[in-house]
Every structure is written in C-alpha cells, then in structure tokens.
Image (cartoon, rainbow, N blue to C red; front, side, top):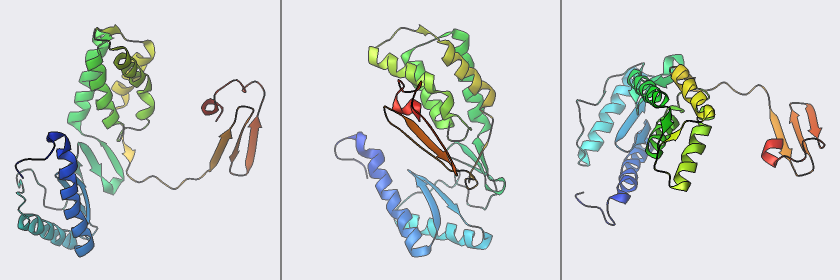
Length: 229
C-alpha cells in the first residue's frame, strides 16, 4: 500500500484492521495465542515445542501475504522475560515493569521540570502522556498524576503559552514518580477477597462491605454524589 484515502490520519486505523485480521486468522485456524499492536506481534505458549511451531506458522503466513519481517528486531526464540511495547514482562514471576531506559527517561524528565520550577503547556502535555503510559506498569500511577492532568487541561482551555509556576500538589506528584517509577505490578491480579457496593443520592449515601452495611445522611449531604460514594 503506497497511499491511503483521506490522508495519513486514517493510517493507524487502516493498518490495525489489516494486522488484526491476520491475527484473527492465526487464532482461529491455528489456535495461536497472539496479541497485536500495529506491527508488533506477541506470541505465547506454555510448551516450547508448540511455541516454536506457532512462530514458524506465523512467519510463513505473514510472508505469504507479502509482509516483510525485520528479523534483526524480532525475537523468534522462547524467552521467560522480554520487552514488548516498552514494558518489561516477566510472566514466570507474574510481574511487569518499565524498562531501565524508560525509568531513566521518566526520572530525567521529572527532575528537569522540578529544577525549572515552572511548566509550559507543551511540557505538561509531554509529561502527562509519558506518565499515562507508565501508569500501566507502575502501581497507583494513575492516582498520582491527576493534579498534573488537571493543570494540563486548564492550560489548554485558557490557551496559556507562557510558563507557570508548579503548584505544590503537582510537585508532590512529580516527586512521587521520581521515587516510585521503578516499582512493579502483577500481570495477573489475585481474585478479590472482599466485595464493596456503594450508592449515593442527594439526600443520603449507603454501602455494603461483604455482609456489613453502612449509611449516612446528615453532615455529608452537601457533597456531590461521587464524593459521597
């Protein structure tokens, strides 16, 4: 394909449709466990011999369809630990984490912003995107860049182009990331041991934790439903 209708904006979607079709064919016809993101294929199997056969089939199918495989960047041998899409996967330990390069990148970016003591819209957009990606592998990562995200949204809505001083809550979040970006998270989480259900209206709130029920309707009534829950 040398050109795409309606310009390059549709290229990722069109490419994903093609690669996903190939992956679905491999899954349905050859029962291959495969994950696809654009041009990255990840194959998994518990049995080494079956895995090698699945890799062989996948390569043959792709090349028969005209795809050119970059063998230098491809890992065709079984591994217990590998890097895929910027994440270090260790399935035997049930752990995933950022790569060493990504950790260095995040720490360097965070320290640069902290050293400046101020932030521009462009810098806010860059670091929010970086931390949003990293949150997939860092525990409680999404909870620790919300104020930075709100600051970015505020800068975008106001069309602010000049650098602004860093609010203290944003500084606290950046310091948290500098300290905790090396942490790991499980690939598969254990089943829940407790069950909590909540609900709230303008007049009251209620919840049930396993067999214990709680409710309230006085001093909290002025808060929004989300805060009540």
